[in-house]
Image 1 (cartoon, one colour):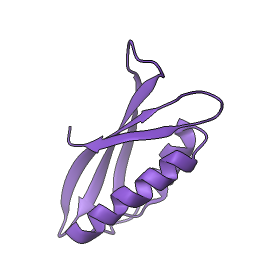
Image 2: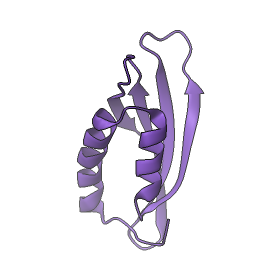
Image 3: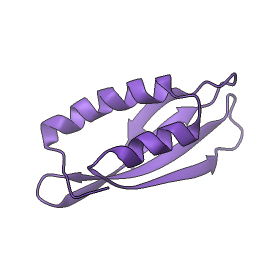
Length: 94
């Protein structure tokens, strides 16, 4: 992870690429690796399963470098319906 940063307009496009990457992934580890490979991502933290959800869901917290050194944190909610599938649910603020 280097020091590249997203512009505000690129942040919206990142959301679109994120949805595609999550929905194509077969595991949380693939999503984590994809996020870590993005040059503007400074950290990725995969949370434990959320309780009482069917299908199981997880949060992934990601720190993104935006603009002139600003860091923003986003939470990615994914579900794991089974059969080597992962599904994007939402992207939100913490």
